[in-house]
Length: 151
Length: 328
Image (cartoon, rainbow over all chains, first blue to last red; front, side, top):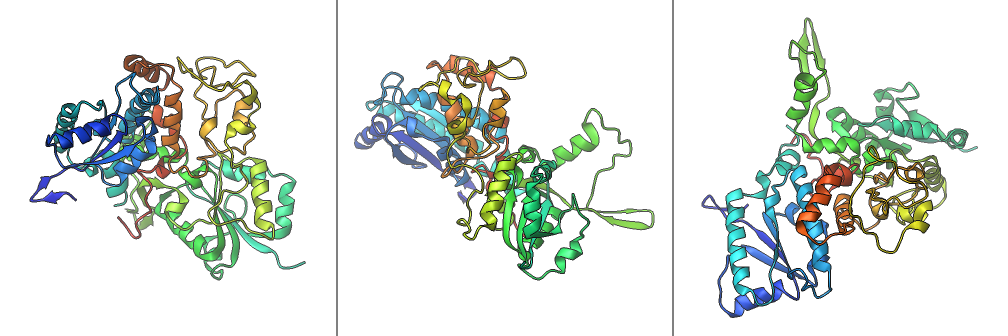
């Protein structure tokens, strides 16, 4: 997987909210700001719609990193959806760590519709970070349960 | 009377509580015995593996399997029973979703063997012996089952027709399930027998005291504080998983002042119980400040994996894979 010429290209899943981060990605696009093509973006109406099941599903199906993008605190189109995201994200990170997945593979960022540059910076940073972490199959959970589960 | 149907009851990695649940049927078990003839029930009757091997394929009407699959012997037995049975039922939380033994999936086989045969505080093992599948002692060669690197729910090993949830399944659930099985119309394959399709809160006697919105500033633990009776455990701050758990147990734990730990597993259409529990527990935290949320989590839910995945880690989305046949 992802192993052309021994260079690891991470697959990153972006789950962006319709009102802020998705528009920021749009802005980055029309402003011709380039950012790594490793990210595949999915749009949800609110970052509060991001069920932890989506995150596990993503990791199971080969995402090396997952970036959730939402509106800044106080700016949520649905008033408090992003606060729920924040709470879930903080608890989920702890669960991921215990399961044996590097919690740095999950990241939450508040990016408003006008912050195309922030989106560019975050995606660049995150891609580099995941690149340094290596493929998700290197993580303990995958090694224990999916790769070496039977000798 | 027509010929009795053959029934088998087998245990894998389990504590024996599910066997107890069967015996708990008390006089109702007579109805079962009236309709069924046991061909295998290691805990109660003396049958051998050969007895099952000598049966024709699909000769057993129903096989109940409790416990998760952890060793090669368990895998072989489950496969054998699948071949010989018309209907195979995963009985209890371990067979259904992996159960408490499934939490061992966070550790490698080496770590587990090391702890139990070497580094554990109460271990005395000067010769440093560890179980190995084949070994020779004097003139004898021994074979013991292989200890797999992870725990599997039964449906990750063979095709399962129905599930009976619970740790252990309650008397009423077992009775409902058996009634459904011996009725003329069998439920749809893959369904959960005996339990409710609504969440536990729906049948909880404390549901009346549950407000529309729940906010928790501090999570409590039952081993540190005593819950007030007759008041929803969630509003008191105990992480009760009733809202995300299938009902059917009649809120036994809650009636005993103990928060639900989720042994009846997920509701319909939920693929990952733990993820749903994370979602629910996190959303009732009463704070919008990152530092404060972290503090509430770290103080009250210090071991979140064991809270949300107590019975279902092997069936969590990340770990949900079928066993690879004949070695990985």
